[in-house]
Amino acid sequence: MRRLASVAAVAVALSTAGCGYNDFQRLDEQSKAAWAEVLNQYQRRADLIPNLVATVKGEANFEQETLTKVIEARAKATSIQVTPEMLADPQAMERFQQAQGQLGSALSRLLVVAENYPNLKANQAFQDLRVQLEGTENRITVARNGYIKAIQEYNVLARSFPTNLTAMVFSYAPKAGFTVANEQAISSPPAVDFSGSAPKR
Image 1 (cartoon, one colour):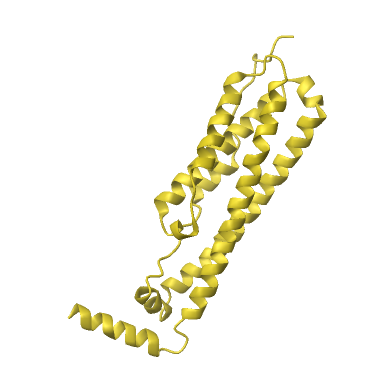
Image 2: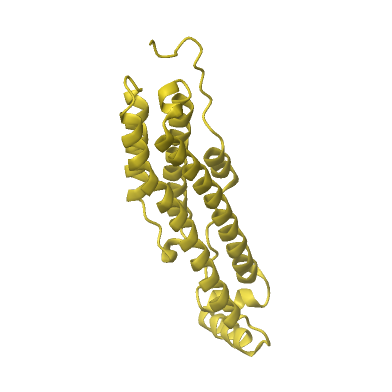
Protein backbone atom coordinates (compact mmCIF):
# COMPACT_ATOMS: atom_id res chain seq x y z
CA MET A 1 0.00 0.00 0.00
CA ARG A 2 2.81 2.37 0.94
CA ARG A 3 4.65 1.49 -2.28
CA LEU A 4 1.52 2.15 -4.31
CA ALA A 5 1.20 5.57 -2.67
CA SER A 6 4.84 6.33 -3.55
CA VAL A 7 4.34 5.27 -7.16
CA ALA A 8 1.22 7.43 -7.34
CA ALA A 9 3.11 10.39 -5.91
CA VAL A 10 5.88 9.92 -8.51
CA ALA A 11 3.33 9.72 -11.31
CA VAL A 12 1.56 12.85 -10.13
CA ALA A 13 4.80 14.76 -9.69
CA LEU A 14 6.13 13.80 -13.10
CA SER A 15 2.86 14.30 -14.94
CA THR A 16 2.01 17.66 -13.38
CA ALA A 17 2.88 20.59 -15.59
CA GLY A 18 5.56 22.67 -13.92
CA CYS A 19 6.68 19.97 -11.47
CA GLY A 20 9.50 22.28 -10.48
CA TYR A 21 12.45 19.97 -11.09
CA ASN A 22 14.40 22.57 -13.07
CA ASP A 23 13.46 25.26 -10.56
CA PHE A 24 14.91 23.11 -7.78
CA GLN A 25 18.18 22.80 -9.68
CA ARG A 26 18.36 26.54 -10.29
CA LEU A 27 17.47 27.52 -6.72
CA ASP A 28 19.77 24.90 -5.22
CA GLU A 29 22.70 26.33 -7.18
CA GLN A 30 21.62 29.84 -6.25
CA SER A 31 21.53 28.98 -2.53
CA LYS A 32 24.94 27.29 -2.74
CA ALA A 33 26.40 30.38 -4.38
CA ALA A 34 24.82 32.60 -1.71
CA TRP A 35 26.25 30.36 1.03
CA ALA A 36 29.70 30.48 -0.58
CA GLU A 37 29.54 34.28 -0.36
CA VAL A 38 28.63 34.06 3.35
CA LEU A 39 31.65 31.83 3.95
CA ASN A 40 33.84 34.13 1.86
CA GLN A 41 32.99 37.13 4.03
CA TYR A 42 33.43 35.23 7.30
CA GLN A 43 36.83 34.07 6.02
CA ARG A 44 37.71 37.67 5.15
CA ARG A 45 36.99 38.61 8.77
CA ALA A 46 39.03 35.68 10.10
CA ASP A 47 41.97 36.69 7.88
CA LEU A 48 42.00 40.22 9.34
CA ILE A 49 42.21 39.03 12.94
CA PRO A 50 45.89 37.94 13.10
CA ASN A 51 47.02 41.41 11.97
CA LEU A 52 44.60 43.06 14.38
CA VAL A 53 45.86 40.92 17.27
CA ALA A 54 49.50 41.59 16.35
CA THR A 55 48.85 45.35 16.28
CA VAL A 56 47.04 45.30 19.62
CA LYS A 57 49.81 43.23 21.23
CA GLY A 58 52.15 46.14 20.60
CA GLU A 59 50.20 48.24 23.09
CA ALA A 60 51.63 47.94 26.61
CA ASN A 61 49.36 46.49 29.28
CA PHE A 62 46.54 45.66 26.86
CA GLU A 63 44.03 43.25 28.44
CA GLN A 64 45.42 39.78 27.75
CA GLU A 65 42.09 38.11 28.48
CA THR A 66 40.41 40.08 25.70
CA LEU A 67 43.08 39.08 23.19
CA THR A 68 42.93 35.45 24.28
CA LYS A 69 39.15 35.34 23.79
CA VAL A 70 39.49 36.73 20.27
CA ILE A 71 42.18 34.19 19.37
CA GLU A 72 40.19 31.28 20.83
CA ALA A 73 36.95 32.41 19.20
CA ARG A 74 38.68 32.68 15.82
CA ALA A 75 40.13 29.19 16.18
CA LYS A 76 36.69 27.76 16.98
CA ALA A 77 34.94 29.68 14.21
CA THR A 78 37.40 28.58 11.55
CA SER A 79 37.28 24.94 12.70
CA ILE A 80 33.53 24.60 12.05
CA GLN A 81 32.82 24.09 8.38
CA VAL A 82 29.33 23.91 6.88
CA THR A 83 29.43 22.60 3.33
CA PRO A 84 26.53 23.19 0.89
CA GLU A 85 25.48 19.58 1.48
CA MET A 86 25.00 20.32 5.19
CA LEU A 87 22.66 23.27 4.67
CA ALA A 88 19.63 21.11 5.42
CA ASP A 89 21.04 20.28 8.88
CA PRO A 90 19.71 22.83 11.41
CA GLN A 91 22.10 21.60 14.14
CA ALA A 92 25.15 22.14 11.92
CA MET A 93 23.94 25.61 11.03
CA GLU A 94 23.32 26.42 14.70
CA ARG A 95 26.84 25.35 15.70
CA PHE A 96 28.27 27.47 12.90
CA GLN A 97 26.19 30.51 13.87
CA GLN A 98 27.11 30.20 17.54
CA ALA A 99 30.82 30.06 16.75
CA GLN A 100 30.62 33.06 14.42
CA GLY A 101 28.51 34.92 16.97
CA GLN A 102 31.09 34.31 19.69
CA LEU A 103 33.83 35.62 17.41
CA GLY A 104 31.77 38.70 16.60
CA SER A 105 31.22 39.36 20.31
CA ALA A 106 34.91 38.89 21.13
CA LEU A 107 35.88 41.32 18.37
CA SER A 108 33.31 43.86 19.55
CA ARG A 109 34.76 43.70 23.06
CA LEU A 110 38.30 44.13 21.76
CA LEU A 111 37.30 47.25 19.83
CA VAL A 112 35.48 48.67 22.87
CA VAL A 113 38.47 47.99 25.13
CA ALA A 114 40.77 49.66 22.57
CA GLU A 115 38.92 52.93 23.19
CA ASN A 116 40.70 53.12 26.58
CA TYR A 117 44.15 53.17 24.94
CA PRO A 118 44.97 56.55 23.34
CA ASN A 119 48.15 55.25 21.72
CA LEU A 120 46.22 52.42 20.09
CA LYS A 121 43.48 54.76 18.92
CA ALA A 122 46.17 56.92 17.31
CA ASN A 123 47.87 53.94 15.65
CA GLN A 124 47.18 54.22 11.89
CA ALA A 125 47.60 50.48 11.29
CA PHE A 126 45.02 49.73 13.98
CA GLN A 127 42.61 52.30 12.56
CA ASP A 128 42.99 50.86 9.05
CA LEU A 129 42.28 47.36 10.36
CA ARG A 130 39.28 48.65 12.28
CA VAL A 131 37.83 50.23 9.12
CA GLN A 132 38.42 46.98 7.20
CA LEU A 133 36.70 45.02 9.96
CA GLU A 134 33.70 47.33 9.96
CA GLY A 135 33.44 47.02 6.19
CA THR A 136 33.65 43.25 6.45
CA GLU A 137 30.89 43.15 9.06
CA ASN A 138 28.70 45.06 6.61
CA ARG A 139 29.58 42.60 3.85
CA ILE A 140 28.72 39.70 6.16
CA THR A 141 25.30 41.22 6.81
CA VAL A 142 24.66 41.66 3.09
CA ALA A 143 25.84 38.11 2.34
CA ARG A 144 23.66 36.62 5.08
CA ASN A 145 20.65 38.54 3.80
CA GLY A 146 21.36 37.24 0.29
CA TYR A 147 21.50 33.69 1.60
CA ILE A 148 18.29 34.12 3.59
CA LYS A 149 16.46 35.28 0.46
CA ALA A 150 17.90 32.45 -1.65
CA ILE A 151 16.84 29.70 0.72
CA GLN A 152 13.46 31.30 1.31
CA GLU A 153 12.71 30.95 -2.39
CA TYR A 154 14.00 27.37 -2.37
CA ASN A 155 12.03 26.42 0.75
CA VAL A 156 8.79 27.93 -0.59
CA LEU A 157 9.20 25.76 -3.68
CA ALA A 158 9.90 22.69 -1.53
CA ARG A 159 6.76 23.22 0.55
CA SER A 160 4.28 24.38 -2.12
CA PHE A 161 1.94 22.14 -4.11
CA PRO A 162 2.58 20.55 -6.58
CA THR A 163 6.35 21.11 -6.35
CA ASN A 164 6.36 19.60 -2.86
CA LEU A 165 5.69 16.25 -4.58
CA THR A 166 8.84 16.70 -6.64
CA ALA A 167 10.71 17.61 -3.44
CA MET A 168 9.41 14.43 -1.78
CA VAL A 169 10.31 12.20 -4.74
CA PHE A 170 13.84 13.58 -5.13
CA SER A 171 14.47 14.22 -1.41
CA TYR A 172 14.84 17.98 -1.71
CA ALA A 173 14.74 18.88 1.96
CA PRO A 174 14.23 22.49 3.10
CA LYS A 175 17.47 24.29 3.88
CA ALA A 176 18.33 25.74 7.30
CA GLY A 177 18.66 29.49 7.69
CA PHE A 178 19.88 31.99 10.23
CA THR A 179 17.53 32.13 13.19
CA VAL A 180 16.26 35.39 14.64
CA ALA A 181 17.87 34.75 18.03
CA ASN A 182 21.27 34.08 16.49
CA GLU A 183 20.96 37.09 14.22
CA GLN A 184 20.46 39.29 17.28
CA ALA A 185 23.41 37.67 19.08
CA ILE A 186 25.67 38.19 16.06
CA SER A 187 24.57 41.77 15.50
CA SER A 188 24.53 43.04 19.10
CA PRO A 189 27.81 44.15 20.70
CA PRO A 190 28.36 42.98 24.27
CA ALA A 191 27.42 45.29 27.11
CA VAL A 192 30.67 46.45 28.69
CA ASP A 193 31.09 48.76 31.68
CA PHE A 194 34.46 50.43 31.92
CA SER A 195 33.69 52.71 34.84
CA GLY A 196 36.78 52.85 36.99
CA SER A 197 38.66 50.31 34.86
CA ALA A 198 40.75 52.58 32.64
CA PRO A 199 44.40 51.53 32.52
CA LYS A 200 46.81 53.48 34.67
CA ARG A 201 49.37 55.55 32.85
